[in-house]
Length: 532
Image (cartoon, rainbow, N blue to C red; front, top):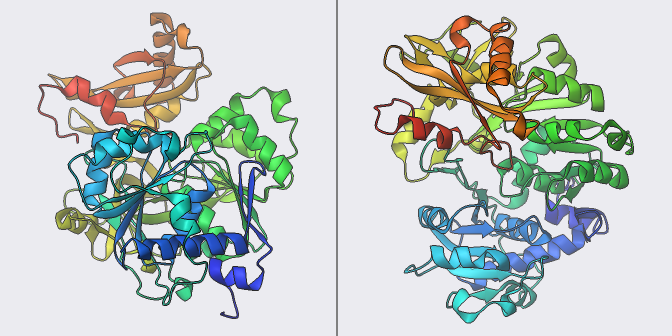
């Protein structure tokens, strides 16, 4: 064991009775010793299935202890782990299993029909079925729903030794891009080749960079199949802290768990902020939030008025970071943000941020929007799996881009304006929808908004706003006119939506990302569009 523990196995040896993981609110509690033994059993089980260093494993699992066990088992067996969003269809799951070259897939029993359909006519993928907390288990499923050769998770794990593999090799994370603008692409960083404790893991980097201390109690509010929730949850196990994982997000339940579990660090996305803010004031006041030391948010843009409201609620302990599954990024504290509202901060390791002209890739001066490029984190230089062309396009002079448009102020603070792919070009003028969306959501009648370009014979594109209201039945021409005037008071005339529609719910995933293409495509059918 090293003098300074840096990963799960070291902490289990140094302080095995320390609590590593809590599922729900004390539904299941794992000490470091127990999680160490269970993940060792998973690692040995993977070897018994014939998986070797560099092979791929997919995970289609609910938020559960099994998710974390499999994660750490793969990380100790040199495996590439690919979490899969369980909202996807069988066709979409089939693509991910095929593209990732998965040799095995761990799936909760309730999701087995989707995986079975995805694997029709496919061989070489071992299905490991995990019994669910919802009462669905492999034994209750019809034989036709279980693929040939499927293995029960408890049989695989229970029959495997609790001792470490020899040697242990650090695994890797292979997330997929969201697919909001096309087929998802696997983001594949190289394996280090060293043991899990060699200090090169992104998990350890997260915990160290953000100053989370030993003994912290971190609340994970989002689905673990997203990169931030699982990376932050497991990063706690590199610093001797406790991760509390919600099975599903509920605004009041999150506040109750913070109170009951004395949570010190928590991470939200802006849609969660909005749901907390929508709670009656007397409900929010029931819970003691004084244990909180830091509240993190990321994953989607947060409007200025919403963030101010959350700073008022939690205090000046909000931290925002901007990154993607490919890496990142920037970070900003509440005091910094209050001086520069709307900024997402400066480079999180004091590295280089460059804003380049999207066409010429020449540097742009402070204040002028362009394509944002970052110096990558050394432990996470990535490539897009099976797509060298896209990989090459993401890098320029050693820096990489997430495809976002933004500008730097004179002090090097970054302000984002929108995704490059969302840019509206109307009459030759670039319009960035995020700015308009932020203005719309400042109106008290609006819960959410999506702005995008639709075909226009004269200008090429015109601005359309699709708005989700606090009262879904309140949409009317009079309210549309009121919202239009609200925008006109705050935006240049060419940015004001030319048309407005109301919807019951915008298509966001549960990590807050807006699937704008699902809205936009219906308007561009039959038109030539440079928007992807």
